[in-house]
Image (cartoon, rainbow, N blue to C red; front, side, top):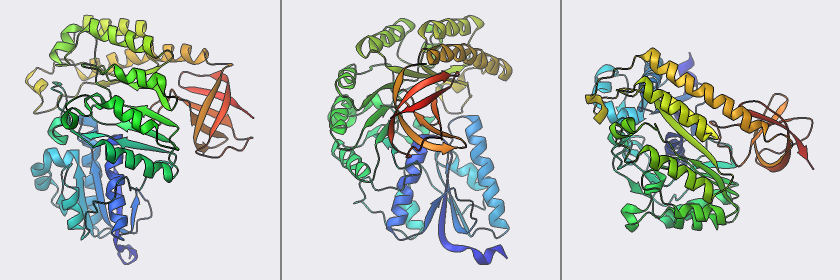
Length: 436
């Protein structure tokens, strides 16, 4: 019987969704380890008696994946393959009463800020002294680094404030201490994340204080790259560009989700900006930080999006030539402001429009990558796969951006920086040779 081989108190944490969830799972696992509880992340060993699923509830596809995962483990519990099943995270925060009713096999559901209660259920104490102590699920050399929780923005399509609450900045001294702890353990790259990086500090210091935080983090010994994700365009603090330009270990990289460019769509989305302001901001960023890699995310098929709005977005994407771009078909989420609007663009049209944007972007990416052939780049190597060592330039974030592939005929240590000359390029991959 498999049940006899279960380690009753061993915990397996399963993470769904974004980098913010990965961070939360790492903190949870660090707490469990500090309580001498055996813990692993997404193990296939099948010997853990306790499963904790950290769910995503952002858009329809993510919600469905979370529900399917819960049902799969609920079935395993019914068969005696696990002893206890707990669910935490965004889906659980948003739909707890419904989930309790529909999937009663789960022992308990917890919200996004229920970590102390979850630990108590597992007979573990919340260790307040664990500043930055967490079990990384990423390779040791890079870490997601959450500087704030929640969001105060009023975007019409977004359910995050329902699940994550109001914006709460982490005090600067805590973040600097966390960075020092990570650096001491071999982390070289910090990927700064939050629902909105540019709001950082308003609640604690009564001003946008991301530039000061960047100054302090860049002084932490051992941190070679600091990367910025999820910067909101309205009220963008331009002073961070001066810091970025002046500090060699802050990557010339910015992830700024813009969502759309049509004035009608931006107004309905409650983005607090206009087409011209968006274009001016992108131009200012590129002027102040020459060579910066800009990543953005867009939405196709938002309620009321006309063919004209879509064409306007396509023209803008062609003209702007973003270095990195992703697009999602609009998801009609209950309790958001946009839910009161008619979801009047068909699923097929949403998908077709998203694919049209990505087709334009693929051509741009191919052209930008071809320009890199023959040039030399500093590359951080993340892993070995088949015959290649795979790494990234300063312009690329893990999972979502381009990769650099170098034949494994040379030995490269994972987590090391190396100089690479690019020899050929595809739309989303660069091939290179190691320079000694």
